[in-house]
Image 1 (cartoon, rainbow, N blue to C red):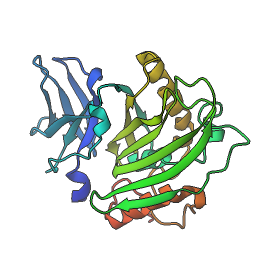
Image 2 (cartoon, rainbow, N blue to C red):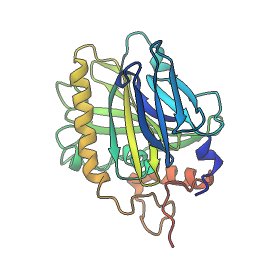
Image 3 (tube, rainbow, N blue to C red):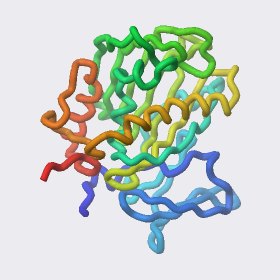
Image 4 (cartoon, rainbow, N blue to C red):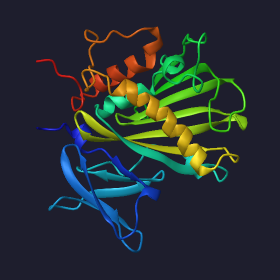
Length: 282
């Protein structure tokens, strides 16, 4: 199939830095194509199509990225990765049987917190999603949801009590979403959770999670286990989504007020002419 240039020329994650052993070649798929990748004995990362040409590569935000086309050199900015007091680590890469766009949209949804992440990110009777603002940044071509607030009994690994957690959601590209949320150890600052999605096929993806945390209490294992618990709970929702690709119209799935960011994301994809990974009625 012909893949639109916006998708073909983008950067995609294939591995978190600590998951690769030097001198080992790994195999995966990206946009329906087989690729191999790895780091050599000197730590240099490279990738190529199976039996074919070398791919453009870059290592950024604790993640190895690959493009099958002609990508822009500049990356979206996440300055928190340069702050010396942050813990930077990968929190797992999970293969999911949905479009990568579905995985991003699920990441943007707060309404399911009390029902899917009970005791962690929400609980009854705190079920209402308060109104929040959504804005498009025309300079960077990104979407932000601001003034998001939700009561969470255990917002993070280091939490000792429930708090009203402030959120900012950011969509930096169709397959990249970033969450800034209240840090329990430093409530005036925000932890950063990055969801970098690798579209394997139109209806399969690998979700790579990278953390930039202010937590100096929890171990690396504790931080990873907490995030993997949350994502494991999300798998129940994602694995039951039908269709597995993402509808961009409103006939199949009707948004509510609580879905303002999801609706904005779908409109944004539609305006960009994205069809890869979207639901096409026949």
